[in-house]
Image (cartoon, rainbow, N blue to C red):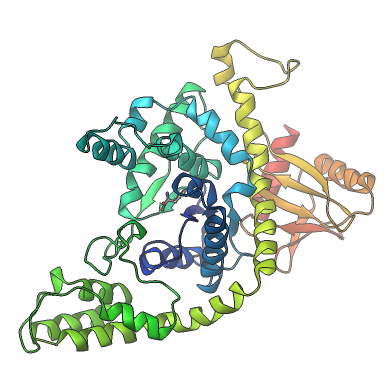
Amino acid sequence: MSAITRVLTGITTSGTPHLGNYVGAVRPAVAASRLPGAESFYFLADYHALIKTTDPLRVQRSTLEIAATWLACGLDPEQVWFYRQSDIPEIPELTWLLTCVTAKGLLNRAHAYKAAVDRNTQDGNDPDAGINTGLYMYPVLMAADILMFKAHSVPVGRDQVQHIEMARDIAARFNHAYGGEYFVLPEAAIEQHVATLPGLDGRKMSKSYDNTIALFAPATELKKQIAGIVTDSRAPGEAKNPDDSTVFTLYQAFASSEETAAMRAAFAEGIGWGDAKQKLFERIDAELAPARERYQQLIGQPAQIEAILQAGAHKARALATPFIGELRAAMGLRSLTAVAGTGADDGKRKAAKPSFKQYRENDGQFYFKLVAADGRALLQSTAHDSPRSAGERIAQLRDEAGEGLHQVEALTVKLADAVIGELSESATLDEVVAALAAMAE
Ligand code: TRP
């Protein structure tokens, strides 16, 4: 495995981001995207939203709000893969391929589906009354999201851990059935202390309990919502138990360990609920105010966000398109002229090789990419004014198999004296040379 960790997560676009989403998903994901050695994939799970709502305006509005949230929280779309799930047609395609290796019994055991069945049974209804097949298939779609991009680590709330385990199970079955290491087995990453935030009433903060605190509500509204958090009736001066207090748990999610220790002491000393809530408000507002301002600006410019998402889809599909091709071929969805061994031989066939991909950009110029065997772009060429010129450069690179390549300032790569292109953010010159050598074999 390479030293680079791929981190991927999605947010379903069916609501307005709340503090629980921020603490449980957006904040740790943005922080992880800044770590050296990480490649981050963040996406708007709008196909998942269709399972929950039939209101098109809600899906669209939520997509805008969630995209603006991530950008406002410091996500740099140049540094990461930031895209909308429904812009990647390879995702539903992969969902079907995975469906065919997924045990039905596995989906029967999914928490969300089981809970819906239990409710029906309790109410004396048909077990599947009112349950759409999307809910049932939810874990397979989510597995496709994760496996498509070979994510190692998936930051999610505790309630989603089962889905990551299912993705592992599905990946392992596929790898086994088709005899190759096609998919990386992903792992859930949960922030230790605050993976699940309580809401106003102390239950898990969730849209379905109507107990959320909006992430970017104006400060006055935030204050009002915090004032509405349910507490016990202990008076100021009476010692309070931080460990069953929503106010304390929320505070802890935003405070340093020193601040948290001080708040714990204040609880023991009998801080009044009003004062504790005021401190909670100040702590949260201090963290959110700058992002709130950026958010308001972004929400007013949907065209700018749309353009960012389109660019993100282009970048994501550069990985998804070749990979789905590899998977289709592995499963037998391939040209009738492709040389097919017996089924058993197929599984043991050699791993895919690196390749060159030529394409034309909107600027009318011709480019190529060197793509690694695992689908990652390693090198992006300079512009050529004809396909022929691009092709000649490719031929030269192939012939020289990595000889004479060197890296000058930052990511620029030269062959002898000519600048030929740029390394991808995540690639090294050694990987380029190794790929060219492998192609020459
Ligand atoms: N199911 C996730 C949620 O509701 C959203 C999601 C969809 C997701 N696809 C994903 C999260 C892939 C992580 C990875 O929170």
